Image (cartoon, rainbow, N blue to C red; front, side, top):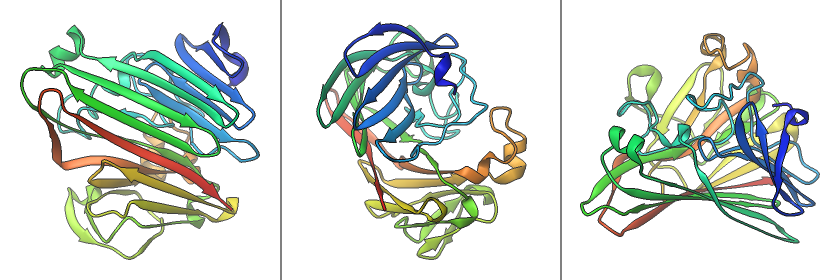
Length: 291
């Protein structure tokens, strides 16, 4: 994404500006502690860069900003289901238009809140009333939380994920720990498998870890940093890298871009979450960089 092509629509404060990029509205944050961008299309964090640090979040150089599609990279919001449990894949939240409801800032950073509620389009896909709130707390660390409220008169169940793409130097020099041993291997039709304490990458990896620790650690060796991913409200963690063959078949990824990304996702898989009328549940991920 070429930030030089962002056109300013409205300056909301010294640190927060509403911009437009290829027809998509983007909330741009430029603060002494952090730079970040959030697309209202999908409620989707596009980039996050703490002061003095390299980009923490990966965004495809060939990402397509099309309101009918999800953006490749960043943190797509998978809701109210994960994967191909229904149509469209990963739900409709990541291709819906969210509303900026609040922004705050102080010396430590910026907080931006977006909302999404049911409408005629969503009810034609998923016949339930809801209120979703995405909160982005951005400073030296990033905390993203999705709070879902059942505003209907009957219970409903949902799943989903904060599908975070992390920017790394070289997938061949990355290891992940804290994800647990048991996983469902999507490259083997969901086969139940058991792995080691440390995960390294040398082929396509698409795994749903069923008993992750609260904090998963990405050792980004060539960037000389460790990324701590602390998840709450989840019952699984998905780890994904498409490797080269799948990347080549994706129009919105460069052929070798798999080398500089890995996904570690805070996920509600199986069982899903049931909410009674008026009940809420929060799915979150906190991201911190250590050197």
